[in-house]
Image (tube, rainbow, N blue to C red):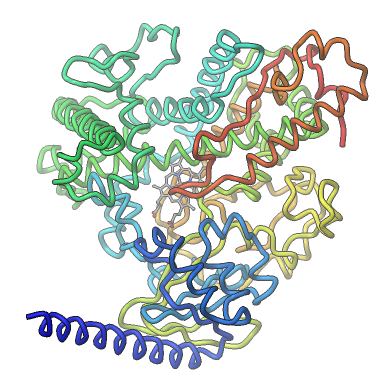
Length: 633
Ligand code: HEM
């Protein structure tokens, strides 16, 4: 018996060894055929399981092979490498890094031209939908599908992303920023608040819930408005309503927090394991599921009665595809099942709030670290909107262009450049067809099934595309890793460089078709600034995200300044007795702590702070600043 076990084990080991070596040889041959320089790694670093066990195989690899085989390429295998290593791997290995493992070929690119080419050829370079499994938890949706199915999802979801609804987002962002700052002023304990990440998430969730779904969510202490639909009140409730054990916001928050356990844990274990994290994950999922089922049923009734909600009414549009009377449905020729309806609603809640919230969060942290930029932001707000104007009177059509072309737009763009919520946009070649790309005028053929990573964090730091100045805050020769919103007022590169590769006109797939940055500011080379991706599969919600951030920043900084909290080192009394130089020294310490915390950001779906990391801030009325009115670097 023992000898047969040994025999079977030996045969299995031999089989795996054979598969491993032959796979590696085959992929090396394919890599050679591309004509691009390539780098060999022992294990496919982008596979989910291999990512989890990276802490074992990476050190082992380094231990058993000479340094020259791993020292460069390891920089694109490490955890969180896109944000942590930024442009460094590309500076060392070139703008296109071809990585070969026994099971895959991967091309990571920071080249604007290659990015532009791949992103615009949607059918040649589709999305690797298998990488989006985590987002299909409640059903397939516009983000997770490809081909004809994607066209169908896009057709249903895109019409509501129009300028009329952008104006509504503008209004809602002002209302919500009011709710958030009132809440902060009321709850700042010891002069500081620690919940900026959580609160910007609530702000963005409240906006998409209202504009996208007609659900009015409120801040603690804020009454539900009189015109709110009574049957929708349960979604706004700050206590779990009957039949639920979490509030609606808590259920979404819980899902976001527990995405990985939800994805990786088999249902039987999730339902039965006495482990706290799994129990919380299950509770969040069950609650959200129930809310969505109830919401779906309510919408079905509305649609059958011919009622439409305010704003985008995303759920209404989705439900109409299946539940409207047959004649109307026939016109559109589209039908979604309940799982796709709920899947799309989920993705709009998710994509529509975490990304935007991160941009607001990091913008506020950086403004606290860059007092001169904060002061310039406030000057621009005063000029465009008026220091004492009532935000309720701000007119979207009149003001949004000027806001985007000012320091408000520059702050948003710079945060998107330095801290993009999505750090790499995945694409691939199909399983049946090789594809050609052009690098420096030379054509290279990528074999079928090559994974392609359009590296957002690196293309936005590519010195070929971004004019730089010496860093003021580190000893680096350029300021491309620094948050410098003023760079958006530097002259653009020449027309020729701006145009990028000659590309066919893109088909219209709905949604906002204008540029993401103002024409009167620095215009990035195409393919070098891709926080919203590029081409037909670019972000559907980018216009509303931009409008939301512009309006919220303008509201907050019209009346207030934001400073790093220093109570960890000095009390208010001690600060009031300090001279300017002592205050500067103290504030520099707070800035350094903030920068260290920001540098620890990691990607789990989006780039944000994790493990309880946060930067305490202080909201002060303009004119009552203790640090940012004077301090400069
Ligand atoms: C600053 C905020 C945002 C950023 C940085 C962002 C970024 C992105 C990126 C990079 C993609 C492409 C993802 C991929 O190919 O894997 C994407 C797609 C998408 N985003 Fe956003 N997004 C933001 C806000 C929003 C908002 C507010 C919504 C909706 C309310 C939204 C809805 C979508 C949808 C539906 C797609 C899929 C489009 C398609 O494949 O046809 N996003 N977003």
